Amino acid sequence: MKHTILFLLSFCLVAFMLSCNNTEPAEKPEVDISLRNPLVEKVTTAEEQRVLSPDTILKRLKEGNKRFTENNITARDHSKMVRASIGGQYPKSVVLSCLDSRIPVEDVFDKGIGDMFVARNAGNIVNEDVLGSMEFACKVSGAKLILVLGHSSCGAIKSAIDDVKMGNITAMLAKIKPAVANSANFNGEKNSKNEQYTDVVGVHNVLHTIETIKLRSPILKEMLDKGEIKIAGAYYDIKSGVVTFLE
Image 1 (tube, rainbow, N blue to C red):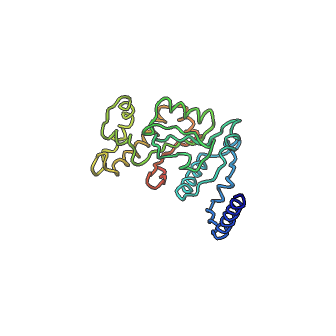
Image 2 (image 1 turned 90 degrees about the vertical axis):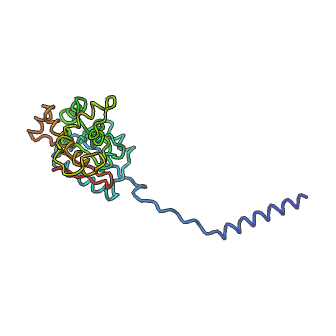
Image 3 (image 1 turned 135 degrees about the horizontal axis):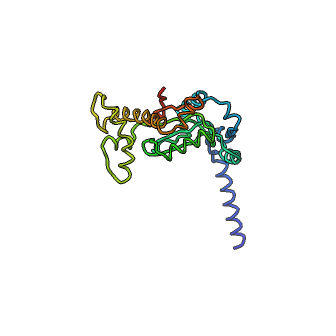
């Protein structure tokens, strides 16, 4: 009986070894080399922030969006960048974006940890909280560019066009209504289903937000007049990922 068990075990072992020799090795999946060795991008220092001009920062945002649309964003070691930024932050810009979850702001401009302040709300509008945040970003922390970023297919824009009334949303949409009024000369169907019309209102909303910033923040207006900062507008296409800058 004992010999029989040993024979069976030996037979199974030989059969297993033969089957392994006849099996072709599995093809190894391709691995993006950039993922193995991510770039440890240097976190911006106070001196580097100081010497940058608003126009240079704007140019770099345009270049970053080009990389984003070409699926060529920078590989970063975020863990190391987190640790490198513990001592302080010196962002170059502040972006006011819509709340929309389809717009990953830092990725859209290919920026990393410590590169930019991001304020978000439905419809990229301003109130005293956003204005105070922008004043902190620029006057206190040294950011030199404010970018108001609108986008296509914006639910807040469509709701303002449709005159939606619901809780605190009503007061929020009231801040977008001037953009609807400023789009009165649009030649076509003026409703939320017309994509061209919603884009026109969206762009007017960005421009209205910029004017509101200048009007309601003497601090930022003074910095703008002195050339210490620049305030610009842009519009993000959710279909392509392309950001059009409103020069």
